[in-house]
Image (cartoon, rainbow, N blue to C red; front, side):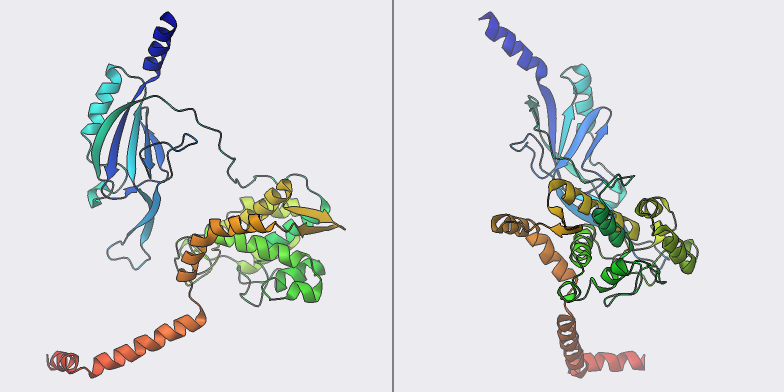
Length: 372
């Protein structure tokens, strides 16, 4: 009896107060987990933990705000939609005071004056904290490159240089082309957008650049924002020719080149593409390199005959990987329609506008406007 009583007391001590609310409007915050006065606030898809002991990640949205009198693209803010879970430390009078404080709040996050972050509090619970299983380490961009075999260094160098040359798809993303002295790397950088170029040229770098360039673009591109120039002109002009020359001097050492792209403030001002100006060219290049290094450590790419080779996945793993990215790839297809699709839509709109102009009611309105 005493043992059971001691267990009940320990469980009672471990219990915590929890307040659950539902978001009426999206909350504008950078991360869905944050603290206020020692209380952990979690914005989550469901107000209960999953099998691993974690609250499910909420739906991500974006909030745009136009500035009156300024001809500029809207300011884009990250926000989330779902439930708000507030966990209070301890179960004493101080926790009860904090609970009353949160119950008096009608919203959280930024832009509350504009109606964002409104909360409707649903219920209060007494919970016992669940032990969480360790999560996998997230991808981080390395500050330093570290030691790697020579063929992998060649692949890293090619990934760092592939956007600084004129290709079939686009010109150099810093306007001026970098003179790459290594003919093997130069050929791979110039031809990685050409279909079937790796079979014709027997250049093992082409499939490496194609894979990790595409993967880095896929992971980074979320919100399209178009700009006329390849960098932020409002912060002053950049001598692109001098930047190209400086990159050319760093190309002989993969470590010097990586550090230059990582730390240089001028490179950080260039966009990855004009249509995705929210994404930086620097982040794109470093992400591609770090994805390559991670796959090498996981055994997804190997070294054979002094070259880097992509290991072909079994059919089952390929299907799982395709299912994982299926919904995201469909979204990207909608954002970037094909050239034929654009021409078809344009033709339909032109026909519709011609019909509208000939419509008697619209013609009469236009006539009245001219008279006024």
